Length: 109
Image (cartoon, rainbow, N blue to C red; front, side):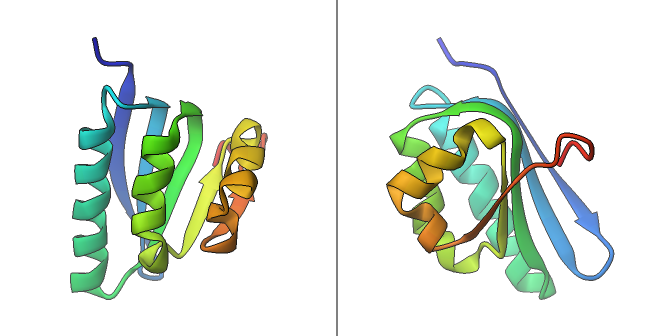
């Protein structure tokens, strides 16, 4: 059974494409996340946009998600994270590859 995951993209002014994920990212739905990230990478590259990955609404992710993010780290401009996941990004080394910032509680992202 797949865990709950929502995926969406938004185009912001200033040439920023945002991939927004919510729920949990694990082995049961990693292919959907991987496909959404690959599509966002392609869209950003073709339009010259910066790519921001917004995980502020992600409550859990496993090593499969870390691996997918690491594989695309060089094209992700910024990663916005749920504060609960900040230590995961630091321990995994992802925070050394991508600029990771905790989501602001007041802004929601």
